[in-house]
Length: 258
Length: 261
Image (cartoon, rainbow over the protein chains, first blue to last red):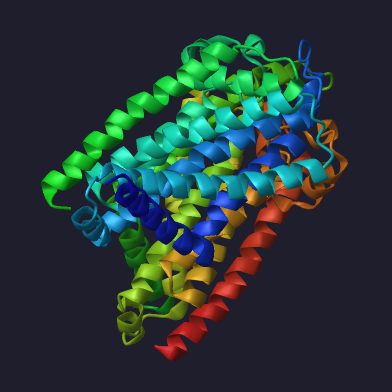
């Protein structure tokens, strides 16, 4: 049964990745938006490094690279959610449901696809960042921590989007998948560290779990890790919560006959 | 009825149709109003400390950044109107219109008047929200009029480009595909910082050649500087040039499209 589940997961992942890498309309938004945010933030806002109290060893380009890496991870998960919704809308997912002995393997398949899609995007973004002269402060272990956090965010976002996709089973639910993710990301300390934020945005950022994941990821990049336990704990909690959300979504799709 | 009167009737009817159709689609109207306000809130909150940079022209980042909101609103109005026009082509409505005595200029003028009206409504909403949160125009009430005029002209410029793409491709998806391109134009401008404070040389260079920078700076000057003839001339000039290019291209594309229909 285990090997059959694995083959279902791999088949779902392969199909998703095949459509992704052969259709520019799918590959370009996921790739261009992070690159574009990186260029706009790192290039246009470099002077932010001169704001009194701002201190980040590797420089503002690296500071924004970390945000863009996490953003690409989260949106990579959301875009995979769009694919799930499309499969349900076109009734293709019905065949998956009929064929899979353990339907959790379907979610795992989409998860593998989301991960590969994000690794592709992250590689391109990293090459562009390094080519633009980005400094890296952390050592190998720190960078592994940074990538693991990004990967966990990718999985959490995918599970969130999958839950929405399987409940609504239409691409029109796209805004519902991406707007909360966009909000949570941009209500974190995007441009300046948490300590330098003031007013309502500081109050919101302080209770936003992504703030601590972002601050920890930047700490890894600078070689000066902060909030490590909290960030990994929050990321694990997000994954656990959204896994339940996605599984219930799958049950809802099964019950509807998809 | 005189030819001029007939033209006015045709433009009015098509503009009314364009406005009604947009208003009947809350899924299109709501993001166009809410998304720019959301970005305004997030960016003014997150970048408040940037006003401490030496040489920053105001102590309120809301006053500085709200100009971008008008540009983003114009962009949304453009995409909505372009998508509607593409739908008219896809559903055959444009072909049916071509069988009537409707003048070609009325079709374009009616459609763009609808887009401009929506752009102005959006601009009024953004301005009201800004004023409610403390934005005060250095140029006073006259500045509001000039700001709305510029916002209308910018919407006309972008909307005419959206119409051109709709007429050329006849596809709503192709018009929506313009979004990233326009978004890049907006972000690679002086939207976050005055050009003299952009520290990255290549970015400052791009922002200097990007006409969107001058449209943003003209709106911004009305809010934080007072009457700045140079900024206004550059802003209105760039918007007028964009509108001229867009209208010319749209007219040519419409002639070709109706020739095919």
